Length: 376
Image 1 (tube, helix red, strand yellow):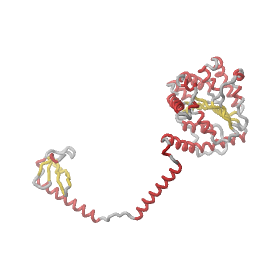
Image 2 (cartoon, helix red, strand yellow):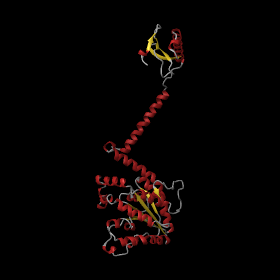
Image 3 (cartoon, helix red, strand yellow):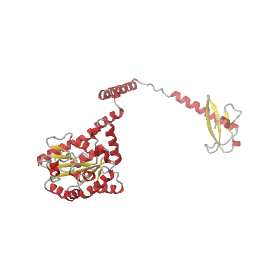
Image 4 (cartoon, helix red, strand yellow):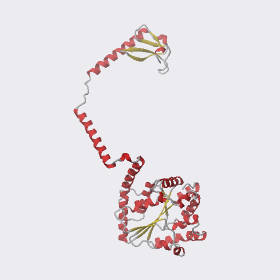
């Protein structure tokens, strides 16, 4: 309500509303000024004709008295002065902030010349490395146990192109004893190898006692890549699918520790990673002709993936499905799966070895998802 909504009274500074006020219970109100300030007060009358001028004047006088009383009591209160102690606190806080700022600048160097996204990415990698270290220490303990017990371990890394296999292998082996592990990534078979038993060229790289071999792609090329691109006949593909489960069961029965990891990347994330490879000169070497066809042949690869997971997972050599759109979480789960594969000495039980069920997916759940959609 503004001043036009009030009638002037004979008492200086006092105005009475023409209409009932909707906010204050539809009651008439008085408006008055005191000490060049405007105040509004509810009179509590439902009918305007019951508001007497004397009643309104009494109201304003009571209000004035309350204002004067509050002002006098306020004057009696001691004034709070800024002490030297509070000044010291502010000065100390300012010094702390300056020191912190100088320390961060000494670490970041000439950070203004860097792209913000590069700086953010680099800092995030530091945190990622740090968070993995406790589990990487456990891998060294696992290696020591394998050597002491003369055990052999094979870890298979499978997945579509750009699913994060290589990055996971680098994080897993970063601090391991390089005398007791090997990474095997086989290229195209030679003419001699084409005329051998298919598995022979892989067996040549199997671990000896106390050793770990990590296969960056494995004999499962024959289950997915080769049939899609026509590098093997349908008969060769079917023979492999029929025989591989028994082959792996024999390996496990003879004491081999066999871990099969499948990195499951979504179609959308794979495309994003391909685009980055194409546009980033430091990553262009990763992009190949096969990559160019991966998105176009997505459905064909999905059909072979579904068949491979359904037919080649077994009790003795199960597939572990790792959703890898988030690379860091995928690496965590890969580490935990490997560490949970054996009961090595000196395990740090304060660490969390439980599977993240949003990332570490069972074969059954992955197959169910693939029946609904081919996005993975």
